[in-house]
Image (cartoon, rainbow over all chains, first blue to last red; front, side, top):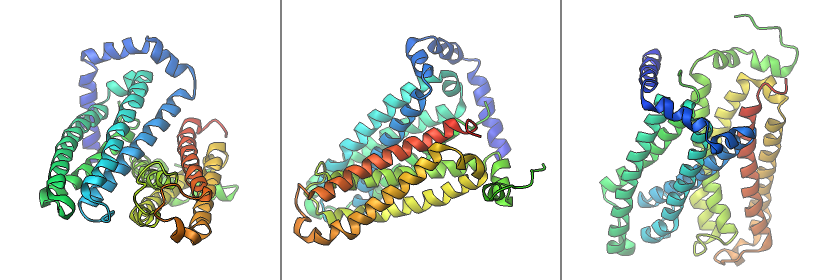
Length: 182
Length: 170
C-alpha cells in the first residue's frame, strides 16, 4: 500500500519535472533572494521557526474558535466576541505562514516545486482557505443575528472539525515534502 | 543488518528493537515527526493564547482562571502527544541526540518552561482571586507569560536546529 502511494507520488513528481516548473525553479536559484537564503546556514531554519510559530498562532486560534462554536471550550464568551478575538490571528498567522513559506521555497525551489507533495499541500491550503472564508461568514453573520444565545447548526460544527482536520493534513504534507521520494 | 555492541546506555536505547525498527523504516520517522509537529503547534498555540492574556495583550475581558481552564486541557493533550512522539524519535537516534548541543539546550529549556509554569500555577496563582478579571496583571504573572513565549520560541528554534545539525557533532 505504502509502496503504491510512493509510486504515484513519484510519477507525479516525474511529470512535474517535464513542465516549465523545472526551468522556473532553476531560474529562482539564481535570484539574489535565493542566494541570500542559502548563503547563511541559519536562514532556512529561522524561516522555518517563523513558519512554525505562525502555524501555532493560526492553528491555536482556529482551534479555540472551533471549540467555542462547538461549545467545547470558552463558553463564557459569546461566539461573536470569540470570533473577533481569534479570526484576525488566523488570517495574520496565515500571512506569516505564506511569507515564511515563500522564503523557504525561494531557498530550495527545486526540492519544493518539483515535488508532488508540495502541490498536494498547496491544493489543500487553497481548499482550506475557501472553507475558512465560508465558515467565517456563516459564524459571524449568524452569531451576530443570534446574539448570546446563538447555537451553531450541525453543519457549521462539522465544518469546524473539517477545518481542523484539513490543517492537520496540511502539516502532514508539509513535513513529507522533505521525505517523499523525488 | 548488524549493529555494533552498545558501549553506553544511549547506544543501548538506539540499538533496541524499537529504536532499530523506527530508524530502518521508510515511513516511521517522518510519520512520527509529523504527529510531533501537529502536537507541538497545539501546545505552542494554546500556550501563546494564555501568555498573551497574562501579558494583558489579548482576551483581556476573560478572567485568567477561565482562560486557563479553556486552554490548559488542549495544551496538555498536545504536550502528551508531543512527548510520546518525541521520545520515539529520540529512541531511534539516542546517541546522536545526546551529543547535539541544540537537543540538550531544548531539554533544558523544556524543564525551564515547566518550572515557569509550576511557579505560576502554584505560587503566583495563590492570589488569583484578587486579579482574576484585571486587564493589567501583577508583574509575576506578566513575567511568567513573557518567559513562556521566549522559552517556547527558543525550544522551536532548537528543535529545527537539531534537524539541521544531526551528524555534525558525532
